[in-house]
Image (cartoon, rainbow, N blue to C red):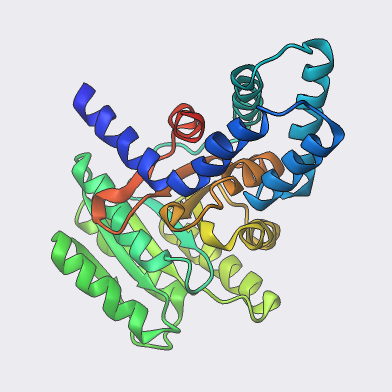
Length: 306
């Protein structure tokens, strides 16, 4: 068990390497200077570059400024520790999680824009639950992209999972309804539904997601039980904008951040959590099926500051 957690932390630390170069390496050098106005300005700029966003960059800088006034002889290690403590304070903020009664099957709706890694994430999520002993089915409800249907079908074959799909252009709601009906007959535990990733028309998106909810509730009470938004971490603050748009149209129950290994924008985790107060359920730290990992705030903070 210990080796498993050690391996998981190693993956997270490796994925956050570029971000850690800012949060640990660059800040350690910066904090080696006197805590002047120029140093604080550089700190704010550095944090903004790590995609904390302007509000958090300013907030972190003010925390360090205040600490420096109280502890004028603080070392760079002391200041880095204050950064760590404030990051922990942010991720320890209370959140409101949707509580749903146990249901079988349990419907997880996966939403997100095209290019975020949404369809691949559905397969990785299915693999995660399969390995935990659950019977899983995939629903290819992104019917506006034939490639998405084909891709999910390939993943389902590799993972040995049932899949329900429709023809390109079919009604996504009908695909999900058929998947839930089939899942009930086969005693499936979890249905993971890939949905269309379009933001061109916000009105269409709202109507589509509302219809999926109405139709799925006809098959299973309380469905969808989870609505998870997949965000590409490399897009930085744009990911936060996407989260706000989707959450305004459909109540999100959690977030999945992919491609954390692809850039120095890992600070977006703090920014999104601080503004959205939504649980970050999983993070993507690589390309393989096992590289979608449950998010753990302690491991994330340790990976940033160690």
